[in-house]
Amino acid sequence: MTGQQHNPQTVPIKQIQLCLILLAAAAPFSFSIWMALLNNFTVEVANFTGTEIGLLQSIREVPGFLAFTAIFLLLFIREQLFAFLALIALGMGVALTGFFPNEIGLYLTTVIMSVGFHYFETIQMSLSLQWLPKDIAPKSLGQQFAAKSVGALIAYLIVFIMLQTLGIDYKWLYLIGGAGTMTLALYIWMTFPRIEGHTPQNKTMVLRKRYWLFYALTFMGGARRQIFVVFAGFLMVTKFDFSAAEVTALYLANHIINTWFAPKVGKAIGSIGERKVLIFEYIGLIFVFGAYAVVNDPIIAGVLYVVDHLFFAFAIAHKSYLQKIADPADIAATSSVSFSINHIAAVFIPALFGAFLWSQSPSYVFIAGALMAGVSLILSLNVPRNPRAGNEVIYGRTQMHRAGQPAE
Image (tube, rainbow, N blue to C red; front, side, top):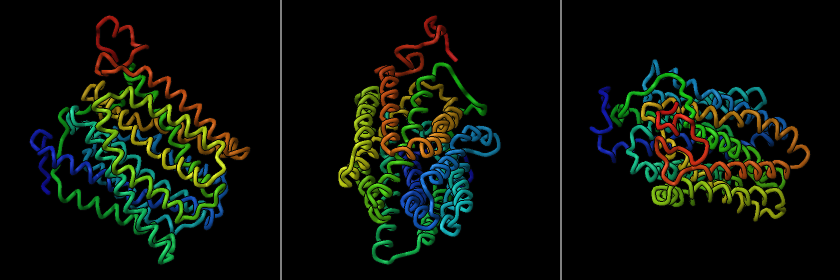
């Protein structure tokens, strides 16, 4: 791979898509092993309770809250190289996790892993929206989501087989996960050309009034994510006594389905638009979170867990909505800011809900999740059927828009 810079228009679209697909698959390989083992590792080895797991997850989300700093780092480093270095940090953090099975050690390795993960996710989103034409972006984003599922699927298969048949120690599984991501990152860096975006990017923080609905949906999406990532998996272990292998089996089911489902969601967004897809998502989440609050059967709980995960594919609509309404020069800055907004709730919800709601009753956590999904549903009703610059929302446009002037 040479150091020559290429405009996306000079690189075959299939090569661009393949590069983005491999990048999308690299991070979930290690992160999925980290997640699959986390609840059992923290309970069985580190003796965590709901309070410690909530604090760990809040610490994990702090780098996500600081993702806006990515735009300042882009003053000194190109985005493609930034993505590569972030993958290396992610892999290193995961690889070290099993060797520090105590509270402080887990907090430190989690920070390393999380810095890499969140910076990578920020840059991956930015590169995708810059490199892909708008007409194929939803479908391609769906393919990337499917690639994430494939990367995770391979990871979960490795975990499941090694736990069930070989009884491999947790630390070696973490090492395999981290090494896998770092190896794939090196392969991508050596194989694909350096690609520049169509439009030079603003290298300062960008907050524009006309993006307010995107910011609001992003904030609520971050809050919703914590209900699944932190508490749904913990419910499987603490209430229903799922083993590490059984939790991994759930993850396997999630990602097997998503390899088929996510491209369909991307195609649906291209056909019927972001508005209808988002409305469907949030109505479904209200029912899923409400069911979590009352479920007592482990099989039904497992089904809810799989359905809950399927709804993450609908987040593709957030990205395609942004691509349609944003100034092309704002993509990198808005991607980094959006990740920070997404993680505002993520910083305080795990610790707060773990200490005050979960400790009273796990059901309270999921009732709160249903209420948050209701707020998101109201917001999604404000997405236009044909969003574009100047038509970002149905209600709440700025006076400048009504006057036909460009809005900030």
